[in-house]
Each structure stands twice: as C-alpha cells, then as structure tokens.
Amino acid sequence: NAGVTQTPKFQVLKTGQSMTLQCAQDMNHEYMSWYRQDPGMGLRLIHYSVGAGITDQGEVPNGYNVSRSTTEDFPLRLLSAAPSQTSVYFCASRTNYGYTFGSGTRLTVV
Amino acid sequence: DQQVKQNSPSLSVQEGRISILNCDYTNSMFDYFLWYKKYPAEGPTFLISISSIKDKNEDGRFTVFLNKSAKHLSLHIVPSQPGDSAVYFCAATDTGTASKLTFGTGTRLQVTL
Image (cartoon, rainbow over all chains, first blue to last red; front, side, top):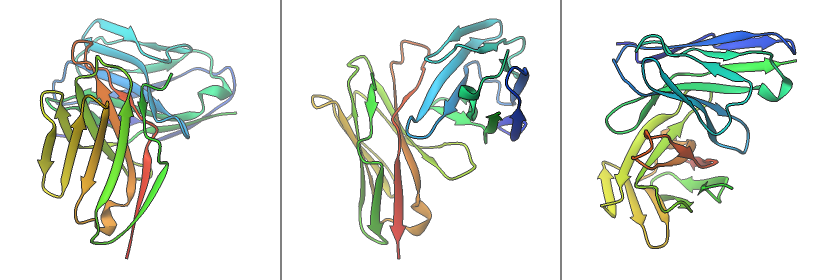
C-alpha cells in the first residue's frame, strides 16, 4: 500500500513548456485533489475530482488542466508554463477523516 | 479573502511545556476542521480533526478545541517534544461541498531543549 505517489519530485521548466505532474493512489479513494503551496499562502486548491470522469475547478485553476480516466490516477497538466507557476504541488486523496497527501513535486519555471 | 487565518507565523516552546496553535475562520458554512503537520520536503500529514458538533477532540498529546461562536479553533500539544517541530496547518471544509479543504497559512513550531 503506497498511499499517494507523485512524480517527478523535482522539475525545472522553461517558460512556455508544457508538462504533466503525475499522481496515483492505491486506496480506491473517489475524491482526489491538487494543491499548490507558496510561501506565506498556505495550500491552495487547483482542481479536484469526486470520481472517475468528474473534475471541477478549485481556487486557482488558471493555467492547469486535469482529467480523471481511472480511480487511481489524477494527472495535472501545465499547458504553457509561466514563472508564476513556480511552486510546490501536492496531490491528495480523501480518507474517512481527511486527506492523505503525496510528498510533493517542486516545480521551477525559468 | 483569507477564510482561514493563522495569525502567528511562528511559535517557540520549551520541551515539556504546552504548545498552543491558533486558527480563526470566517466562513460560517465550515463544519469540519483539521490540523496537518508538515516537515520540510514532505507532504502534510493528518494530525487531528473535529466536527462542528463537538467542542473538543483528544488524541494522545494532541487536543483540538473548537469555539463556534468565536469561529476559533486551537491545537494544544502537551507535553511538547523536539520531534513536534514542524509547520502546522489548520484546514476547514464544508462537508456539503465535496470536502474541499481551505487551508490557513501555517504556523512554524519550534520546540527547544
């Protein structure tokens, strides 16, 4: 039981490049979310999903796309990276009491 | 508009003493509250939670108190240990909205020897 697995752990992108942050969970959880953490701002919700085929926007969705084709996977796509997307990204899946988070992806856009 | 506020960015406490971390919220629809602990280069880990139907929840050294009228919750750690040094995030949710979490900005706790 690996919990929530995020890849890669680190990534450097050039402005305008695209990439996908991977997230997988093996707990058969329906609810999954993506958050970003920036200094002094806590964690902010980007997108979330309540089950396969169902996604919705969170607080800061601009510049990001998501899809949920399976219960296990919830990838986050950056369409055209911008320096403002430099952040630490966390994927989470919901348990009975709260959310279990992955270890994060540190993304730098130069 | 910051719906969940942690007004103390940092707190230093001696080992063995009580640590009290505070959190205020503005959204009256929030009905479930959580505390997460985060070490550097790791994801947040769940610590303790409380439903709005309760005013106190305990788990070992950790107790969360909720004052709904004041829209305030606090986390008490007794006794504090050096391993408790981390950033603590308060989070809140309206369980009718797919349980999206709204986080505070965090409080860095340092437990000194």
